[in-house]
Length: 288
Image (cartoon, rainbow, N blue to C red; front, side, top):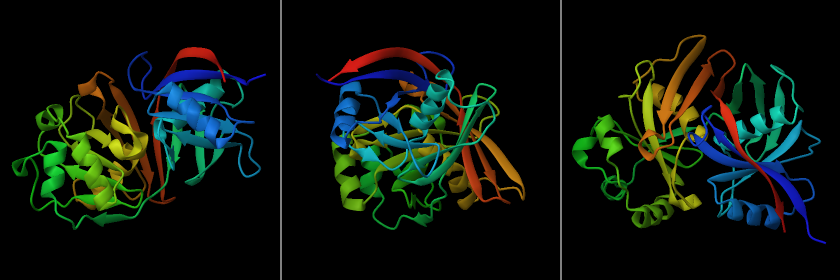
């Protein structure tokens, strides 16, 4: 007899169905890595999350794209918290810890919001030739500032600051060239961002391209939005307070998947968190 699992599809960083970023979530106890990968490929979402027992934390949490296992995924973690809330296995405003490939991550659920710790990555200035990357992403030299460097983070994300929101709206990357450059320059994803926003009160808008991970464009990316707060601080575009700094970022609007992410950094604790809402759009059974 084959196996059967219950699996949810949950839209994260939104409370409206068909917006935000969809993730698959299921319990992974008894599944092999190959089975998890096959399930993620079948779901064909940016990531599918697998929760299982852990002797180090409340749960073990693993994330798979249709192509590979990844070290961190924000939206699938937010979706996992929503999944556990619907399963009534976590309590409101009580810390829950996940054992992941990025270490132990502190999270919690409360007031229909979900909070996830993001690792703090080392930031370096990108020293390689910028021009081929600009071309592959669909940017021109006039779209960026010569004096503002590209930044590459320890997690392999490349951050590019552009002047205008309209530029981001019109981007049409050459994903074949971008994949080749990702391999040549050792980056996994490209974050193109601006401080011009759609909604007043938000602090930045971004798009995220990651053909290296098998995801041409991710709608709303927690693992890119969280570090963006520290990127803005590094570039002198936003100043961190001595206590807690809170911002909100936008993503997904230009591909019909509007999402909003809260980001909070505590200087005293040296901790970075993202937050957002989530909504279940599908529950089903998978047989294999």
